[in-house]
Image 1 (tube, rainbow, N blue to C red):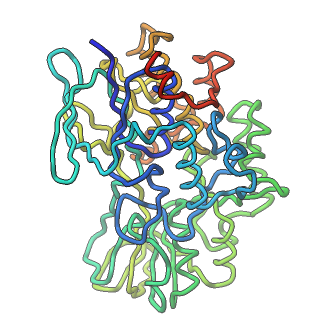
Image 2 (cartoon, rainbow, N blue to C red):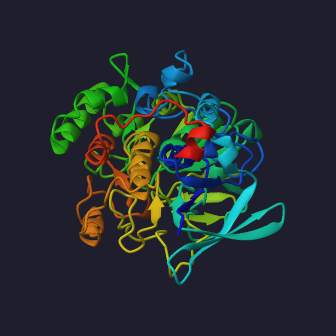
Length: 444
């Protein structure tokens, strides 16, 4: 059967998947619920797919957050070290224009269901403007992202004030003059606490464990560039040295009234933030321990402290979610994710996941490399290892980091080690910076 490939999603991972499939002369289309490419980086004040807010900037620096086929210098050399959501939106849309992807993307289209038929092909049901249609594809590439289905915390009692998830936080102004409690210590939580503290009567932040707060710059360089310079150092030693540097430059958490860090570097995701510690030391953000219970607007913390709040913003992460699959077929929402190179399924040879990993760094450079391997296999230019089941299991039993056992930490990789592992499966000249014309595609 003629190979016909469906790509779910036209965010940063979806567009590089589509681009590399087209590079190989393959028949591919992408489906996306939005009106343009960019995924979560299309900011809107309305509640939608988007999880970025008014002041969001990426937490990895631009040179470690770009496609090799289309760098930030190819787009706009003046882009800031840590690009804003709008700079990123424009970058992704420029990528799609440069590689002529728009004719192959069906916007405003929701993928409702993906099932395998008796031949092992994918029967995909989509909906656009209320009209459903079903198409058979030989291969399926999943790029629907993993920062869109909110995970809510649960505590005894009932909170009678306003409660929302960071997914629905758009800007600080609605919280002017309010008493705000932020739950979480990740990047979103610290950003939300900083932003609301500018306008709120009081902002507090509740942590259940200690988190490392890493500045965006060390010695005048982006902090991840410092990490890149030491990528040749074995990971345990690199982590020890980076932890030591952090203690020298920032100090221990107890100096800021925050929970002590009890895990080794890499066992939880570090938080990249330049302003939280400043806000704490200036009295604008109040550190709090974990929540014990709710009683109306009153929050009781584990140390016995009781305070009233108007609003609670839960920055408690997201489920790894694929609603278009039946749970008996694919369900990675709570358990391990046994995918070789975080993309190859142990059983379904025509199913690929692109960008479904969480590096200590940026996703897109790794997603681009995954997409090149995937497209090469479908085009018959690369063959997966025969012991794929064993390799999938090894992904679970031999992770780069031994992280705490929570759903958030099932897909973590080291940025540099993961890229190195992917590049082993690609030729040295794997970059492809020139757009493929429609005529070239038709004659491929």
